[in-house]
Length: 307
Image: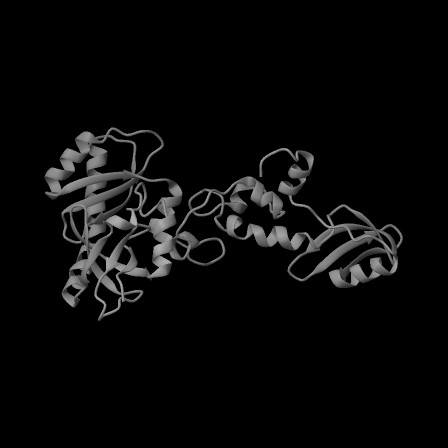
C-alpha cells in the first residue's frame, strides 16, 4: 500500500491536503489527526481519503479563504492520529474563541476601525490566532495587529472574507428550515446570478431569493440544471395550443406534479397531466412545443456568441 492523500478540514471552510504513510494502519474519514502547518501544528478531521482526496487536491483552488492548495509533490505527512488529550485541548481552545472574539471587538472599537469581526480561530498549538472580518472598504489594521500581538502573545493574522464565506463559517438556518448548505455539504461556493432565478421562474424580489448572507441563494445554482432540463418537456407559458378542447392558452406549468394549466374562452380553465396533453395533440397531428431557457434563447439569437 502506498502513501495516501488525505483531505483534512479545520474550523469553518478551511481545509488542506496531507499524506498518510502508515500502511499498517489505514486512515479513515472522520478520524481526527494532528498535522504540520506553516507555523507549528494544527488539529483537524479527515474528510476524504485516497483517490477522492487526490482528485480534489488536484483541482481545488480554495483550501481556505484566501489560500491555495499545495502541489501534490510538496504535501507534508500527517504527524499522527489525535489522542484523547489532543482532542481535549482542541475542545478547550474552541470554547475560548468566543471570549477572544469579544476582546478583539473591543480593540477594534478602540482603534475606531470600520470592520466587523466575524470569527476567531486558534491554531491547535496556539502559535497563531486568525481573525476573520468583513468590511465594506480596505482597512489599515497594522496598529491593531501590533496591539493584538501584545495582548495574546502570539502571531496574529487578520483575514478579510466576504459575506458568503462569513455565513459558511458561522452557519445558521435558511428559509427552507435547514442548516445552510454552505455550512454543511456545499463546500465550494460558486457564483450565483439573477439569470438563474429567471430560468426557474422564481420571484425576482431579493427578499424572496436571498439567503442569510444577503446574497442570492446558493441552491439557485445547483438546482438550475434540474429546472432547465425538466422545463424542456413542457410548453411555454402564454403559448396557445390546439387540443381536443380547441384553442387553449398555457397559463402555468407544474413541473413537480407533471401538470399543465390551460384556459380557453369557450370551456374555461382546466388542469391536465402533461402525458395526456401530449396524447391529445399527437392524435390531432399537432407538434408539441417545448420551452427554452433564457440562455438557450440568447444562444439562438446570437449563435456566434461563445457558450
